[in-house]
Length: 258
Ligand code: CAA
Image 1 (tube, rainbow, N blue to C red):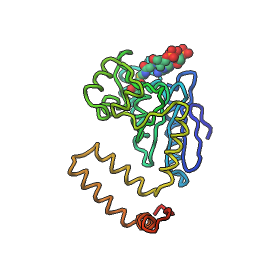
Image 2 (image 1 turned 30 degrees about the horizontal axis):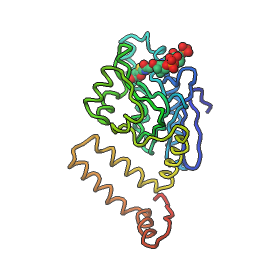
Image 3 (image 1 turned 120 degrees about the vertical axis):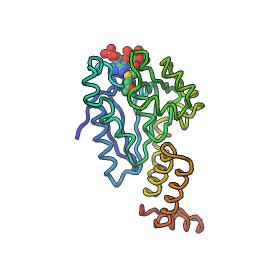
Image 4 (image 1 turned 135 degrees about the vertical axis):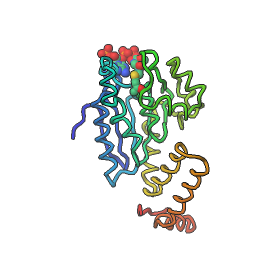
C-alpha cells in the first residue's frame, strides 16, 4: 500500500507514522485520516511492532482539520456522516502505546491528534492551540474534553475561547506535554523512548496503558480495583517471573511476550 499523505516506516520494533502534506502544513484531510487508520491497523497487527510514533515535520505537526475541505459542508452533511468522529477516534482506540513527537504547530485537530496519543514529546519549537473559535467553529475531535483533562478548566477555557497558542514550555508546565527537548534532538529522543517501550514485555506494556487510561473513565476506587486486577494478572505471565528473576539474579531480562 502506498500512501500519499503519510509516510509509514518500521524500525527496531517501532512503527513511525509521519504526517506528510507539506504544502498544507499537514492539514488533516479525510484521505490522510483514512491512511492513518490503515497504517494503525497494520502496525497493531504486526507482532514485530511494540510501540508507535506519530510525528510531523520540523515546521508542523499538523495545522488542524482541513479547513478548505470542510468549509462548505452543510449541517446535514456534517451530522449525517458524523463528521470528524469517523476515522479520527481510531488513534485513541489503539491498544499498542503511541507517542506523539511534536515540532512546530499542533493546532485544532493537530492538537487533538497529539492528545489522543499516550503522551507527547515536544520540540522547543512546538506550539499548541485550539484556534477553531477564530474560524467560527469549536473543536470537533475531543479538544474541549481532552485539553481540559490535561491542563484544567481555566487554561483550557482560555485557549478554546481565544484561540491563543501556547509554546512548548507553557505546555509542559501545564501538564500537556511529558517532556520538551531541543528541536534538533526530537526525532532521536522520540525513537529512543519508543525503542525502550518496544523492548519491554508486550502484554505488560498493554496492561500499564490500559490501567492509566482507566483513570480518565472511572472513580478512584474503581480505578484502583481495576489496576489491582491487572497487577494480579501479571503474575500469570512468564514475563513477570522472568523480570523478577532477572532482577534477583542481576541480569537483563529476556522477555517472551507471554
Ligand atoms: N486546512 C487547510 N489548509 C491549511 C490549514 C488547514 N487547517 N492550515 C494551513 N493550511 C494551508 C494554507 O492555506 C496554505 O496553503 P496555500 O499555500 O495554498 O495558501 C499553507 O497551508 C501554508 O499556510 P500559511 O500560509 O497560513 O502558513 P503560515 O506559516 O503563514 O501560518 C498557521 C501557519 C498559523 C498554522 C496558519 O496556517 C493557520 O492558522 N492555519 C489554520 C489553523 C487552524 O485554524 N486550525 C484549526 C482547523 S479546524 C479543526 O481542526 C477542527 C477540529 O477540531 C477537528
